[in-house]
Length: 378
Image (cartoon, rainbow, N blue to C red; front, side):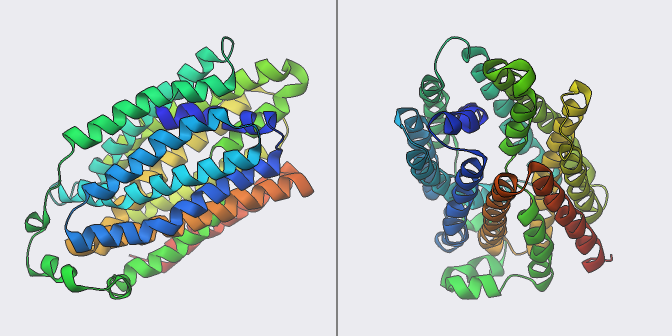
């Protein structure tokens, strides 16, 4: 709730403090890139230490403090610095959290578990932008960042006082204890070959899969001439809310079917759905039905990809003592991809045109879907 309340208005705030479309892409891309710097090691450290929660505490603390601080800044450079710091915290907490989730469930339920986690995460992602949308007519964008501090503090309290480590002894068997003596490099090299091959398609899709706030910026751009600045921003945030509602509603069904069908095929479908949303965004239209379709497709692909990608990765990693490392490497690859994709579409948008940017990433998404299907034939 805290993070999405801020994220939903971030593009408009960046424009208000002197940025442009390329700047929005740079801030989003650099934020994900900075988070990728810490993901692999934080996951490895949670494997080595046998404790998942200490890094999670630090990660949640950074995001709780730095995201609301954006409300104090007066230039997009300051936004960039704070967002990068907050996203480093977000990156640090992710792999240990995912590993702790897998530690805490019975085998064969990874899809449902990640689907449920995504559903609750996205309930907050629905409530956050809804609050922002309600507040836009009454307070400044800066003050909305300050409001986001309240759910952030509650979240931090929940993590510190309610979440508990499962512990190394519950990881099961001799191989779980072998992780204690591994170096970071040997842990990464110990990851199964199938998982490392899987990362190729994940990386290619990551180069295409920009932050969803770019869809919001596109909607605001096409609506601006007919609605005016404030109304266009409000409508764009409403569409972002639709995206997150779709994400919330689709996450658990995606996980449920992932446990009962081919995770590979379902993930490839998610990649293709993203391509459809991007192809539709090529056309500059104010048609409400088309705009709604774009955001519904974007929400659906996010539900499928975010849920099934991690569930499939968990199956491929196998060894409980490598879960943190594996999720860390997976999220690092995604983070680097997000940096490239968000920066790339922002530059293509500004230098050439939005249509070129969306068309390019849509083509890459289709290629990554085909690569996933070809590399894993069974």
